[in-house]
Image (cartoon, rainbow, N blue to C red; front, side, top):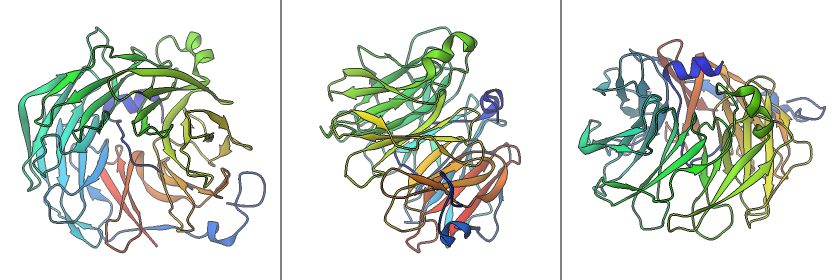
Length: 400
């Protein structure tokens, strides 16, 4: 799937959950029979039709019934669709839909006004403004007062990621966006009532054409840091490619300042990133997928903000992949990586030492660009939901 297709009607942020998986006996291939077995199976009633298209997708309990729901961005008809969970991996056939002023591409859930109900931040590729929708606790959303938060001034908006997270440890949700054309990241602190103030030093420069980013504390100081990618997919692609062989790490001081560090890569054009501990040393590591490649880069962290690419990295995913998340999908106590792969979900199985082997893939639907993870049927296992933007549907895959 090309950059132009992604920009047509979908993409997103992130935010701060993590995941991926692998097979055979050469480097980058599995050596056990478990990797040959399918890890997921479609839920009854899946795929689920979503009129207007299915772009970004996130999981959250938006009606406070302790059952996971699905929130889907539909750029084609400018809608936010909510599929309420029934439990057991089933979702209501009748969806709640909210019309928004611009095509929604980036979405993130979080309680921004501290009322115990999940709210929604919505970004569009063609604006620096983030639309804030307050949740009513019953699965519905409505615009918050003064709901558009302008994250940056400029003439060439291209918002390609949005995250709601507490970036300054005041127990209030803050906003982070990535500006792909401007090659920077914007941060605004929240007041706990739905208001946001852009940081004086924001935006913060990163690599060329960044996409959705990762957020996590990589140096153990209790502050959430930012890892930005560099796809070099903009109009100056030829000139940008030499600068795309690195991630940008923005180390936070918790007061609104960030120190920038480049993390060199053996492979250029990192696309999506995630943070987790992949070698069992209790120090955060980083993985990244790459634009139009089947590569998975693994950077092992020293717990102080330094990273070194793992032996054997990049690993072979077996096919092009896009959005990636981290979770222990085969329940062996080791972090794996799960990625959206166009028409399927691909998995890389971690060995607990920073290495990965190719795991089994599972069919999803045409245009699988984004995914999310959660226990959708209450069995204690992480399931996967994908958005299929070329089929106007979402696929629910339950863990076996």
